[in-house]
Length: 153
Image (cartoon, rainbow, N blue to C red; front, side, top):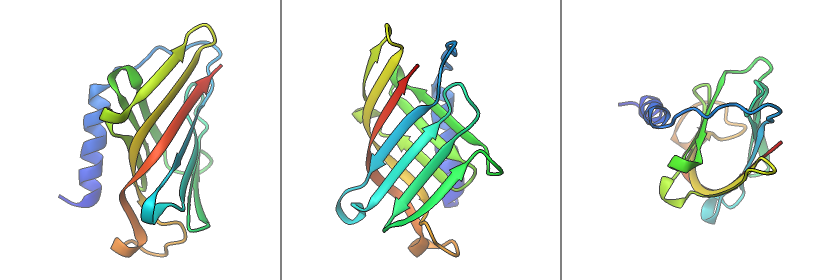
């Protein structure tokens, strides 16, 4: 199974285990920030992912070079976040996948303020920013990152 087919299978398996949550009036996009460690300490992800809106922006910075995916003219984003079931995954086209390790998901909701905050370890797979071609040297493959998720209305 090719790498992309493996990632697509994982993404669909996670998607199948999550149940959609009702959209609340006045909802907004969620903010996700992640950072790497060790040999990937210079890896950062800053994302504005769909809550109620179709707009999105995902920025990956690696070794001071950035790659940005956004809704204007780019591939569709798919995001599943069901923290009660410890599921979180974001995929942009066939290039970017970020998914949580379910064993690490910790979340807090504040229903009165319609807030949700989560911390988790995740894995990212994406081409390295600035890479001209696909290949093992130009690809971040299941790189572990520490993430925070914030959503509020």
